[in-house]
Each structure stands twice: as C-alpha cells, then as structure tokens.
Amino acid sequence: MKKISSKDITDIVAKLCIEACCNVTPDMYRAFQKAKSTEELPLGKDILGKLILNADIAKEERIPICQDTGMAVVFVEIGQNIQIEGKYIEDAINEGISRGYIDGYLRKSIVAEPIFNRINTKNNTPAVIHTRVIPGDSLKIKVCPKGFGSENKSVLKMLVPADGLEGVKKLFLEAVKLAGPNACPPMVIGVGIGGTMEKAALLAKKAAVRSVNSSNEHLDYKKLEEDLLKLANETGIGPQGLGGTTTALKVNIEWYPTHIAGLPVAININCHAARHAEATL
Image (cartoon, rainbow, N blue to C red; front, side):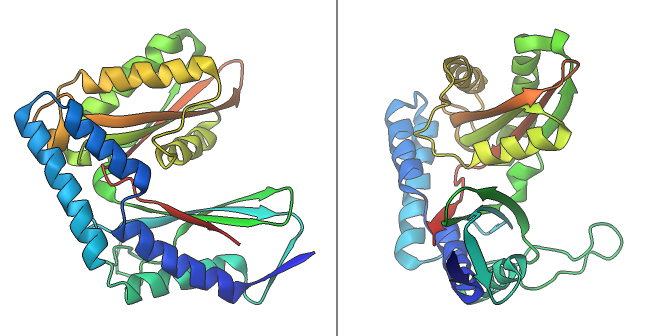
C-alpha cells in the first residue's frame, strides 16, 4: 500500500492556491486570445486585450488575477490503496489553504459563521472539500478558488421531466441574463443535470472547472454544450457586460442518472479567470 505524508499534502495545496490565483491556465489564456480574434465589437475586443494584459502582469509579478481570491473549493480523488500518514487529510488540506493564502498574500474572504456574526477566519479556511475514492494508488488534488461575484449567480432548479430539453435551455438562458456583467464575463459555465438536488450542484461545480478544450463524451450532451454556448453569446452581454459577441468562452455539462419523476438542473458560473490548479501525488 502506498503511503503519503499529510505534510506533502499540505505543501502541495499551499502551492496550488498561489498557482491558481496568480496564473490563468494555458487553455483559458488561449481562449482569451481566440475570443479577441473573433469578437465583433471593437470595445469587446479591447476589453479582451486588457484581460490578456492583466493575465500577463499577474503571472510576471506573481500577484492575483483578481482581488477576490475566492473560497477554496478542493476536489480530491484518493486511491483506495493509499494510506495517509500523519494528520487527517481534511486538516492537512486546510493547513495548506491557510499557508497558501497567508504566504501568497491572497485576500482572506471566509467568515466563520454565515448569518449572525460573520467574523473573518483570517486564513481563508475552511475550504469546501469534495472527496471521491477511486481505484489505484494515486492522490489527485484540484484547488479551485471560487470568487463570489460569479458564485452568487449560480442557479439550481428541480425541473420535471415534462420541462425537457427546452426547459433546460430556458433555465440556462435565464441564469446567464441574470448574471449579466456581475459575473465578470466572458464566463465559463458549468451545467449539472440529473441525480438529486445536491448531485446536480456538484456536477455543475465540476463542469465549471473542466478544461475549456474538453467536450462531453456523450454526443447529445456535446451538442447541447455547443447550443448553450451559442445561446449565451447571442445575449450580447459581452466582455465585462459592456456588449459584444463573447459572453461565454465555454459551456461544460456533466450529467448523472436520475429518478423517473425528476430533472434536476444546476448552473454554476465562473468568471473569466475560471481559476484552478491541480497536482497528483
């Protein structure tokens, strides 16, 4: 059985926090460049150029892409043949979040309790951690700092089977229009379909941090990704909400089997940074 030290987990999480907040991923950077070349409005083209410049400065000077360095969402895939030595894995991850946000001079945005006192924890913990046990002996960690300008525009609705495909499209379009400029477009939009209420939301979150170069393997859902992207860009919201033909860079869909009486749909919107970084131990 492979053994992994909790210290190694803490160290890699700290690095991933800084990496995700300061570096636009290569696929996103190329998406910016492509969008700039295809954007039809001069103002939209100019804004996309500024987003590219901002990404260049952030990478060169090792500073955050955006002042909102988000709430840390962490996806963990842990092989069933792994033994974690030392601290409990969630404690190790939270220690890494704390170190990364403090050492990286990243804004700490987490309050310890959501309604009554809202006192800042001062180290951006706790993270939201999703753990999945997989075959084998690898440990994959994906850190996704989620800003709340876009997170606040997320939508979850329990549609019924009679709503069908058109119901999904209608809900999606309503969410994009509601988000408007507040989600810092051009957006990356994750759509989760199926399962139960919480499963749909988790699917949408996973989809929102999937590569913009990826497509759903199911041909019907791949086509739906393309159709929804077209719908988003036809709104004319444009880069930073100032008009244009690039409201979204990508729509990703994840789906799961569901009940005969249900059609859960969740929409999770990412701003143009769509921050995430990952590593495998």
